[in-house]
Image (tube, rainbow, N blue to C red; front, side):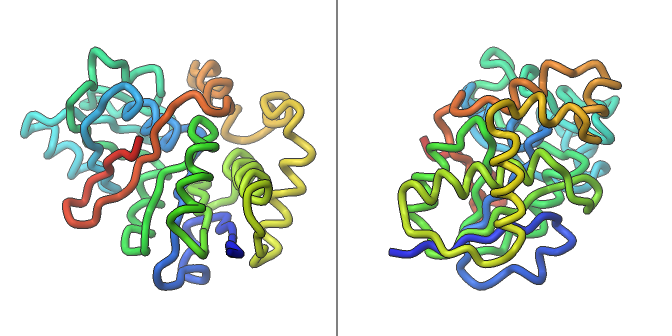
Length: 240
């Protein structure tokens, strides 16, 4: 079976890509989707992704665990920010977490009505590839970007994912965005961290004292989960 694959480099462009029954992989490498994968890998029962910060505050007042980040920093009322290292097994195992971030949860909100929504990161890239081959004939990588702008790290992931997909199936590239991502990955894959050190978001991480998150977020296959969005309950759950 031939798999059609495309990459949407910004949530603002998603309306021009979406088709009925797509498998959409939302990716926010620095750091939301990497963090969600880490939380699930440490036993979280579910994640409730929301775009609105005031709704997150309301959930907190009702006793929920809340992860909330804006502009790389943890929001003052939240239990967690957006670092994968915060979501330890002791804190999140068998718990539901409300989660809102600057970019990642907004991308989830944009694509929540697609055929199947999955959460992707370098940390689950091989398992994600296998799930996509099982579940979809047309796959869209939806990059969260930064405030609707294109970023390097999500685009790099798109190239890496398509490369892996191409090793296991016949792939039809649906736009130049895929070719751009593949070219970027070819240039960066020998040392992604070095390649990305001049990027906007890496500099934000440095400025906010979370440099170690970047190295973790670029490591492949550190978790064994593929989160998916359950539209019936409006929560992310996990496929192991």
